[in-house]
Length: 229
Image (cartoon, rainbow, N blue to C red; front, side):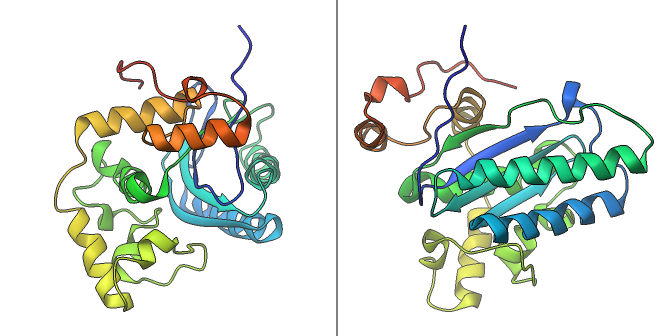
């Protein structure tokens, strides 16, 4: 069965996941995380990508990205992946692939799903039982988005900026979103969309995508409610 084509469009946020091959370890020590984030910033700038949220787990990465060119996220991930694998193989005296293969992704509707997707990403360490609160995890965008901690990698999306007229107000409103856990059904929906390369949005959004891509809504809407790990 052929792979589904990856959806990318200018200015439409893209939630993507890059996993280690066979879910193997991708980050072993602090230097690994720092190198990856430095190169993520470098190649995001070179390709014209904006990073709105991220989390580096031990064996996979989540990013929420938007760009002026539809091709830019793919260029970013290719350059970043190659650079990091070279570093990792040299550092740990290994050879061969590190990543699972193609990253998985879904276009994300801004009005209804962007902030939910950011929460999903930044809550990953909590769901994994690694920390009690997202602020306790160093390798994510939560501290930048919720606490105003300096992070040159993070670019606020317009939806986030709409949370308040002042930075303190936006941060407070964003923290308030984390007082409640994401609904399990929404977590499943985000997982299904990202793993299956479907669109994450309502019927109006999938209709719009179909029009822009020359297809129908059915090509991109989620058709099952079975959770994907």
